[in-house]
Amino acid sequence: MRSMAGGLVGGMLGGMLFRSLGFGGGGGMGGSGIGLFEILLLAGIGYFIYRIVKSRREAAESSQTYYNQSSYGQGGYQQPVQAAPQSYEPEPGDVAAGLAHIRQMDASFDENRFNDNVMDIFFKIQGAWMNRDLATVTSLLTDEMRRVFQEDIGKLLADKKVNRLENIAVRSVDVVEAWQESGQDFITALIYANLLDYTTDDTTGQVVAGSKTDPVKFEEYWTFTRPVGNNAWKLSGIDQK
Image 1 (cartoon, rainbow, N blue to C red):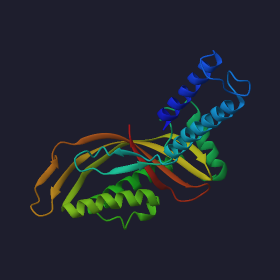
Image 2: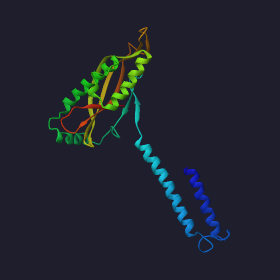
Image 3: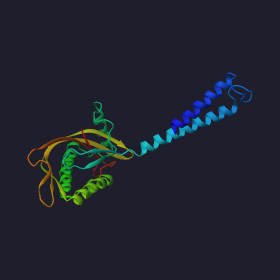
Image 4: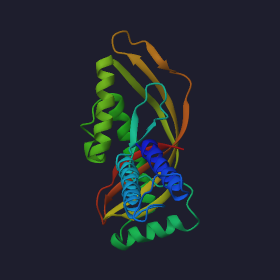
């Protein structure tokens, strides 16, 4: 549409220019040059192009949903990254400032306790994923995260496969981003861990992907959210480093 409209405008400009130089048969209100009608028509076409481009850009921005393959690469799942920070390398003091804002509405917030909670949630979600049953962790997930997990678990069940995550060892949990937005608290934690990640066939028990002996090391960003105040945190996004 933009190419066609651009060609139309170009043709009109060319025609107007030729008439203004005396090559046309008279046009506009004075018999030559660009007349009022052409000016109005050109303005209308320009506005039409602007509305098309603007509406398409707005539609594209409003429908963006980012997906990133999990580091559990052999049988893994895909998770939406919602409300994720633009950068995981904030300026010095940004994290402290973000946590200070969170404490303003929740004086009991403690970063160390939050990190411990992240590890607990991490282990619970891995167990639910391996068992292909989210019943025990539904309260720990946002609706969108639960939907995506459930779709991937449904696929594993349909394929009669189990993605096994064993010998999980969390090396560290560090808060790398903290902010408030639209009445919600958000904190992103960087989790460094290793585990055995492999997929087996339900029927035969054979390993169809991954390794039962070679650990996988990974770093992932887990973003948690809650209503501002002393409320429970829920996982809202996972992204690889």
